Length: 269
Image (cartoon, rainbow, N blue to C red; front, side, top):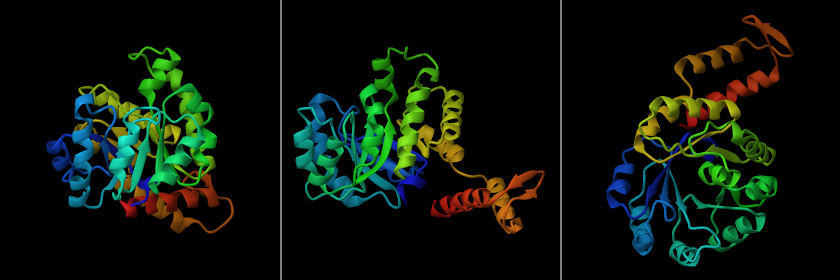
C-alpha cells in the first residue's frame, strides 16, 4: 500500500506487547510503534527492545512506522541505535521545525521519513520540510500546536485552520501525503466523525488515531462507499472529451482524473 492511500494510522506504545499483538488483527492501514509520548520515561528501553520482535512477526498488509523521540531529546540517540538493522516502512520524527532534521534522519536511517508539524515554526517551514528528498509525508500535531498558539484544548479547530491548510498546501506542492492529528476524546464518537469529515473536506488523506475504536469510522469517512465508486465508474464511462453536461453539472478532464484517483485508491485498499 502507498502512504497516500492510508486512511487510518494507529499509534500504539511499542512497550505494550498486548496492544502490539492486537494490532495484527485490526483493520487500520498503518501501525505506528511509538517510542515517544505513549511510552513512560522508565519504559523507553523496553519499548526499543520490543521493536525487533514486533517487526519480525510483521503486521500483514499494514504499513508499519516507528515514531522516534524528537531530535533534541536525550532519547533520540538511543532510538536511532535501536533502528539499526530494522526495516519499517517509515520512521516518524516529532516536533520537526527545519528541513535539516528530516534530511539528517533520512541519511542516518536510510528510511522514508514522516515529519510531525507541531509548532508555529514547523508550520512556517512546512514547504521546505516537505521538499526534502526522503520525506514521505506530514502529520499534524495539533495538541502541541494548540499549546503554542494558546488555543484552549476544548476549543473548536477554527484557530488551527490556517495552520492545517498551510501544511496541506506544502504536502500537495511537493506530492507528499498528509494526515490530520489525533482526536483525544475517546468517548465522543460523534465528535470524532465530525472531525474526520472536516479533515477530508480540507484535503487530508487520512487521520492519525490513538484507539482501535476510531479505526472503522476513519476508514469509512476517508474511504469510498459503493455509491461513490459506482458514480465514479459512471462518470468515466459517460465522458467523451472536453467540457460536457453530466447529470445536471459540467464535467471535464479534471473530474475524470478525480474519479480515476478514487477508484485507484479503493483498489489499493
